[in-house]
Image (tube, rainbow, N blue to C red):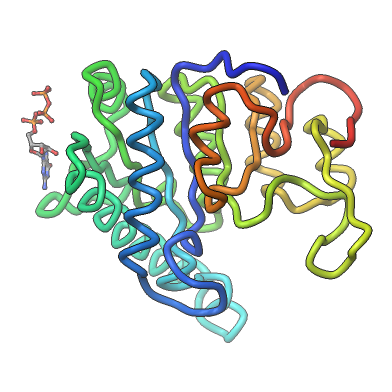
Amino acid sequence: MSGFPYRRILLKLSGESFTVRGSNGLEVDLVRKVAEQIKLCHKAGVAVSVVIGGGNILRGSQFAEAGMDRATADYMGMIGTVINALALQDACEGIGLITRVQSAIEMKSICESYIRRKAMRHLEKNRIVIFAGGTGNPYFTTDTTAALRAVEVGSQVILKATKVDGVYDSDPMKNQDAKRFKHISYMESIQRRLKVMDTTALTLCMENNLPIIVFDIFKEGNLEKLIAGDDIGTLISSKEGLEYA
Ligand code: GTP
């Protein structure tokens, strides 16, 4: 993609962004690295909101597979996202950013509750808004939360941060010949079952014409380069068909 025309973005982070591959919990250094990248975005005049997953704390689906009630397991996972949100808030405020955490599940003693108009006001006031607690409902992923919140607060794009540098036609960890897309349509990614995001999230983005950029947040300076207009990652949009990088 050439240029970066977006002034209001939603950054979707997976819980794994906060931990080293294959382990659980939080690596403070990794949280700080993400906060630094957010700061650069903010400095460039981009309004940033964030949705974080909770897979590093607890993966609801795994507990459900082990026989636990699915809704209960999902609620446990949602609480995990609040832990991550507080860690990111702390890291951001440690480097001078003003943030607000809003949770879809009320936890009034530790953060605000999600109120759409208040979130929008925070963004207008140049604050970073971190959305926690998923959608507040079981059976939904944090990718769907990202799509929902982005549409609700008027974000112009979702930046989906991963540990790979875009969307590939097959798993680059398993297939050396996997090729990266520069662009792919929502429909193509759903039909090819590329597992970039779940179908609910992709459909919500498609219906609201909300583009998604998948990129590697851990490549030094990548987010900064992306918002400066460099050709990074894979764009998923309503433009038909696909284009290889
Ligand atoms: P404006 O005054 O509207 O610009 O926004 P503000 O967020 O600065 O004002 P507010 O008085 O709502 O919040 C002041 C501080 O209290 C902020 O750090 C908020 O995140 C925090 N806060 C607001 N509501 C809640 C809540 O329900 N629970 C918790 N724990 N903190 C809250």
